[in-house]
Length: 158
Image (tube, rainbow, N blue to C red):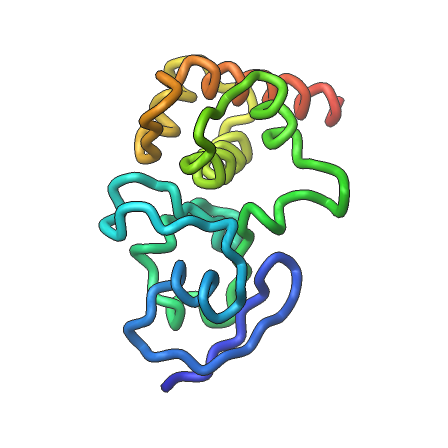
């Protein structure tokens, strides 16, 4: 077992983990943060995407020991109290989900995309989300939601 200390959703969390334990399983099973779904376990779908030090990563392809000393944000920690993140609001307003399984990963990948490119074109949004799969929506409303969030975030910073 290896002892780790990780700031998860703003709270420093400690735990003893097997060196081979995946981050997604540590988050869900040890910390009870089940908002991060286990999708494919092969890093193909992106449903398990979290932010590690602000950058999106598929938590099924990261070992828990690899994030020791770092900060992890899950979908459950993205909101500021009762105030949703602009990307979360836009996904709701633009009907950018159906079954909701891919939504946590899509939202967090979108947050990372917008932190790198605050004014992306439609093609840049599609390219930025290409590692996250949705089997329900056809992506049109997801792209619309990211563009809506970008506009809101740009307006809020002006």
